[in-house]
Length: 572
Figure (cartoon, rainbow, N blue to C red):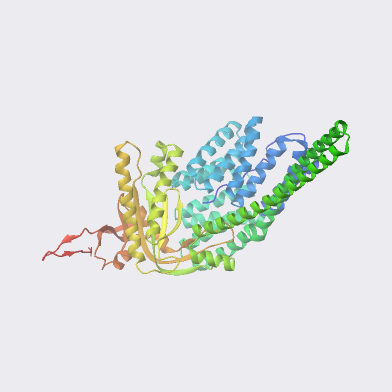
């Protein structure tokens, strides 16, 4: 579910001495360009304004521009860079004790943490934002706070709370908000309703938001609404409408996040950094020249004879030689660092994408989506995770999840599974990707059982010391999926299709400590002697009706007649 529109300090009512009218005009035009999705033009204007503010040492203007640059990197999903600019702005605002601007930055950092996959941490920032806004009593900002809180609760799985805050936000923006903000809140509400499989309501709200976004020329809001409609039509199996929405979505994302625009953003950043470096280098050179001239004149005053003068000139020549040698060493070190970074980037790409997919991406610049048969989707989630998170500190909670996910990664790798992604406390991987593999169904079930075994051992260890424990459910379904990469920025290998939706239902309908599998998966493993599948009967699932479910378990070796050993398997 997308976060609320990023907020800048425009219209906050702050006043200050501006170094030139052109600086304020540049900030104003950048906001208009950003709203249209012209991030390159917006960030170019902001850096021009920043140079003026820095020259005048205008802290207020610098804080405003830092925040605005952060929002552009945020939209561009350069999360670490965005956070660094937000924190620069927040540091200045805290020194100034400007509560309204501090509240804006709390909202932006909270939205950033949501998209980085840390909704628990984001919730603290949004609540601090709300506290300041309630004291001020501005409806438009209250609507933004409520919408961000709704987004957080949605990502935490508390969808009733999410709908409550989002509908409250929509009521406020319909009364006092502009069409762009109204469209953004409609998109967020629609996403939440689609996640709850309330497809008609989700489609209605996203269509209304799309009309407002196109009327205002807001590409970011247009992108959110089209993504919502694509998910809704896919969930209703309305293939034609889903394909049309997806084609429009890809076109908008290409416009917003295309390679050429990304190169332009990078060039603006590098130009600014080089300008600052050249300025510092020039000042250093002038200082060095001043010191050298003073030393030279002092030497002439003390020593007038030719011998000392020749010696001094010789020393200068030696210094230049040493400087040239140091420069050559610096160039060599820079080349070595560049080579190391290239090797690190290659390793990172292979860590994010499967090998064949990474090769296709490097060779062709894009990856075609493919339908793959016989893929086993494995979902896990932690039981009562939200309640547990309320009793643990954010640091302990994240460290605990990290330990579990690292163990799951190792298990998935041993069984040849492809990790797809993690969403909060949910872990998703698949067997039989990116190409079908013999034994992938069996390996997926064995991997899930080993994950439960590992977690049970950890539970026993932590219970002995009185520490909180994670208990897990797991669900598996096998079938066809569509796998690939959508868009041209922030590549992520992902899968879509009804098989994924059914697997998600199976983990929700499972039980703690068990591996809940579909009838399709169990039938594919009938002849496996070391596995058994205990029938649970037909169980009602959201959006799919009643479905046959089985608990997968290992069969322990046992003695057969005649002294030999025999392994048995059954599906009851």
